Length: 313
Image 1 (cartoon, rainbow, N blue to C red):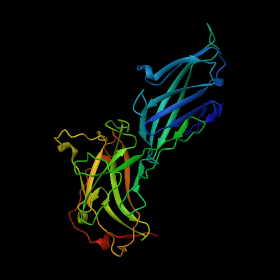
Image 2 (image 1 turned 45 degrees about the vertical axis):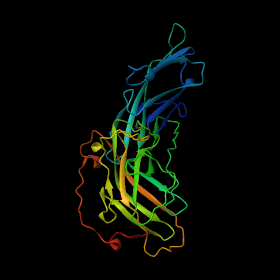
Image 3 (image 1 turned 90 degrees about the vertical axis):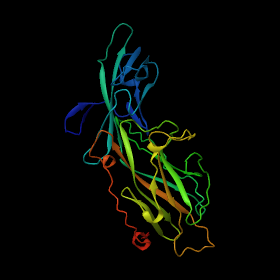
Image 4 (image 1 turned 180 degrees about the horizontal axis):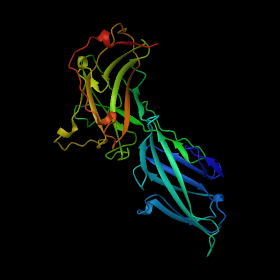
């Protein structure tokens, strides 16, 4: 079939439902329906860079479909930042040749697939009891378009730690006002190796403690600058010289600390559900003008709690 591309040009494209892409937080998965072809014996398929055996395959056209999967930073996948939306777009070209024993009826085809990823992501950590947090993290849900363009999402986990060395992940913690709180942020699914593609990076721009019952929140990190009133600070992992075991630490892990506090006016006999919410900006690592690449200049001024208190609608 013929369809219009974004430039208003007519191009050949598979019939709807014959080709689809699943956009994961670290991969693209391309599926082709074999009914697309007239040949009836076998096929060979390869991605933009097929130097690795994982980036190419051969198979039978007797099967209903075939699938190739590539990391967002593998098999020649390209990326760019769309200027109008600031989405990061990952693109891949699938080359397919088909055969009917010793002849080929179909011409070789190249199909382009793209995945769009928003650059603004939120991570949430909160629970039912006052500072007894249960993890409530946004999970990726793939969008199946039935066409060659899909939408994905980068997601991140917030973890609390029982110690200032970030070695022991906590399931539940009780804090009193003035206690130091230690937490870290990691790409979802990461252990000692990150699930984030090598071509992207991220910065944590804003974090806040939210008490929905009272309808108020307090920012502990704003525009990349920590709130001095609560001693908010980012851990410098490059200064670590120890050999402690950190089960979820990798090159994309970031760690923070702050002093816990209570909201003025909160009933001391009532247990409140409070959440830690952080806003994260994902950037193309090659973009030297991105938010992630900029050095933050932060004032040391201690602002009053009234100045920072936000009343929720």
